Image (cartoon, rainbow, N blue to C red; front, side, top):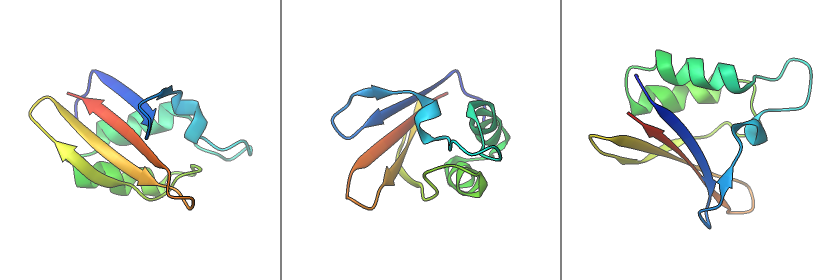
Length: 89
């Protein structure tokens, strides 16, 4: 999926760094791995699947909204907090 920008925000709308979802262990996936997974995806559902296969802190993603100009993915952590990853096409 071609994209021009990735934007990670929490449920309050505060911007977060993509590195916040990367792990701190030596084998953890990094920001470049996230970008590659999304770029290699064929659609939003495939992007969710590919992100789940990476070694990240957050594994479960779902499609929250899809328009002609962007896709918004949602992760809900164990405490019920929402995080949104917006992929601008």
